[in-house]
Length: 521
Image (cartoon, rainbow, N blue to C red; front, side, top):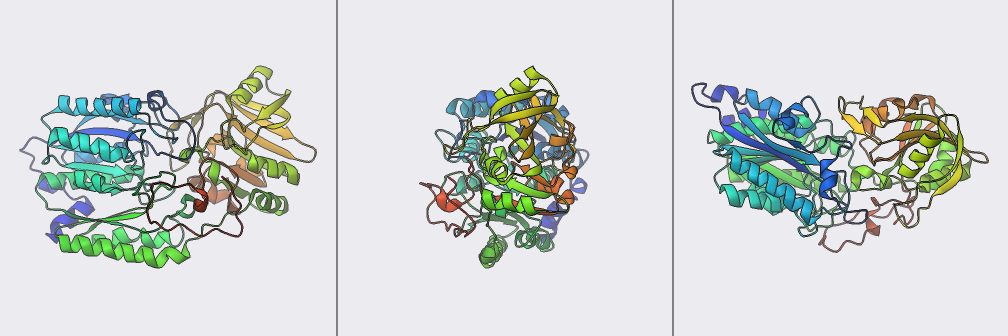
């Protein structure tokens, strides 16, 4: 039995597929949303249909053609399906920028399209779904669990369902019960999204050959702020080494760190283990849990206040200081237009500073109307974020303009295209401050150097770079940074978890309030 599961882990399943038999038919679909229950606007059907940091809604063969080569789970699964001896029938793929709850109309419409596509694709041998794991809808706290329940009710208990989830998934009992296997990203920044989808293909192929997989699911009893979830440093580098170590014992081990802005009883980290026997699965899940319990004291969730960060930037020398505006990350439901950090930099008289991405369609439109080289008065930002964030009224020089079509250059999204809408590079001239800001017309997490270079700004030439991102930026900015510091400026994605008005969390422990933090609701 151990050899069978080891074969799943190494992906050597092509030998088990008899060429004389028809290839198993697998329905493939994707439906992704990461839900912030504490602010912002709901995700409508139009949000899933539009292109932003991801492609627009795709149907049928578009799913394969327009995700091929991208760092997306569905692209990884499709590419690995041939080696695994699987025949793919794509239905649809869609994602929306993180926001508040998914509307009932959007959820039901997309869920029904997936259900109808599965029906049309029958007879099927299996199903693969590219999901996030932290979707909350207006009606369902566990969006993925409800989607899986509907699919399972339609196809019956025997069809293997394999899914991939984001590292920030909040894993419910329903998700585990309705699926045969769940693969989860193992890096944050998420450099292994396609690799995670690819891992699912040989597992599904082995399930179709009758390989037994018992499963165990264990919740971790504390929450971890996302800015503390970086997997490239302790303690999570060691925790995410566990799945690879367990492979030698024939265990499929998966770990999620949870998405803290989804107010849901299952919010938080979780461990999954799959093995030929229930005893082995239970033991593996418990081992991972014990590792989490020992690591709790080593998790660093400190952030600087905006004022302390601005002072640090003023005194910094050498390679760029990167200030992460972690609570205004649009990739976690932030508005990407809060001005707390910008105001602190202005008050400090900061110069040689680059900031992005500030989402302000009105300001971008005024810059485009004025033209490059013009100086215009703007009330920038502070229009859709937290109540304590207000526009910055100042004079801005228009340095450059773009249509906002930005091809990613970094490892995480390399090859993909961001749709930023009309975009402007502006230079704020204050009494003492001089700050360059990239202003967009659509929310987009600042996680790639191309967000700046596509409009003619070189981040390496600045003393300080401010990014509206939580951790994803590290893949591109770590190599050029002298130091990286998370900043607790006001935003809709609150990382000081003691400040969140959780109502559905249960008994999960929260990280203690840091002395460097302030109330940033």
